[in-house]
Image (cartoon, rainbow, N blue to C red; front, side):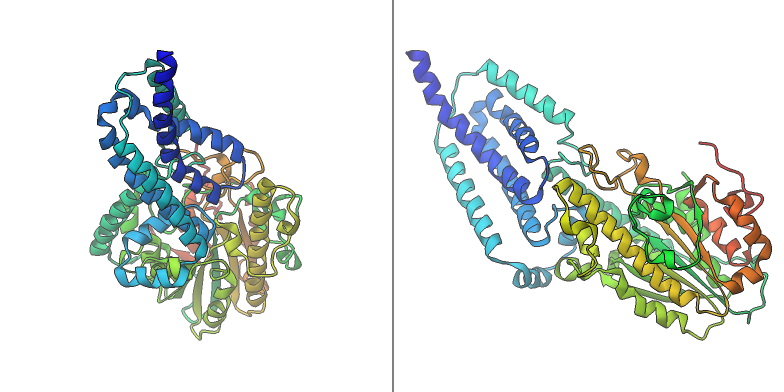
Length: 530
């Protein structure tokens, strides 16, 4: 009887503690996840039990542990609000924006986005949190240590560790506080790095630079940088779905089959693609200059037209390099991320008028860099109304992810086709080179993160990217030897960190800093050893 009475006495405390700790976690789970909810719920329940371990080990400090739980509610409340507004989990970009916001921007955000669902969610979390907090502060936890609970708590913690709940890299089971902590860390690192780079940023000179054409010879080259494009989801690369129907209407491009990105994330990848930064020689390579600097030195009028975010005073390295162009246009401002960058506002077709204007510029030599938002998650944000195709009738949530992703590939193809239609009308030498910054792991398999990630957790599809080249008649006529060799180069294994040695060559430019063995389009190319 005594034992039964004892169990009855302690059961409410542990039960209420479990509910108190689990409430914000489960709120966030159900508002942000739409697949494998039962499995995720079980995992999250085990993790919550692991969070109770401090109470099991040292119940006398229960009130102190309760104080440590308060930030949990604040963080998960923010995650719930983010999910209700944007329909995606709280991510590092949002954390960076929050840290870089001011009271006026916060007020504007509140007036723009607060809606009944947020108020209801906030009140539910507040009521549950305050009720549980008061009970746990007033009630006395059991003073006798329960060895079984301690053992079970340790097992739960080991399980959570195995499932990477503690990971600071975005992961399907990652607990939100770790993501926030990583966002804060990234914010400080980015701020310090960008400030340092801006202080030391100089425009290099290339005294040996030459062009095989006269200064007045008309040339217009277009370099389109895609985002998160998995080459195996393009029908040009044999995908069973017709995801490239628009560019199929033009002459077949040169399709390079064995292309890889240096990293599985945009910033580290493009800082190598755009500069001389190879492998571990990053800072030294960046100081040597960028591909935009090369075109400027060769007498081209350079354009950087981007649908990616410009981070204003703490602009990232890619944005900073882009601003070296003689005309740099960013149609999205980082400060407006939470107030204007929503579904339908970041579609790539908004770049087309700026591209048209650049093409009409009177400069005889022009190079136009176009940085797309492409297939960056959340995928449905990249699609204007009426461009949904495969995702209209998706049978399952897992298939929905793939279908919407394929729709973004199809939409990117439409945007490229619009640019091609303008390029093929040009009478001067012209080409369009398209490649992606990195790939994306995107399948219906439960093991697919449907994302890209840091190199530590990257998978092969995150590096496999498309690279295609279209040339007009004038370019073919001016470069007969290169055109005759290109079909023999399509199987070359190539890392896009060496494009700075390749694109100038494609454009009739030479300089001492270029390395022929790293030039995808050169007879002297030597494949790198893996």
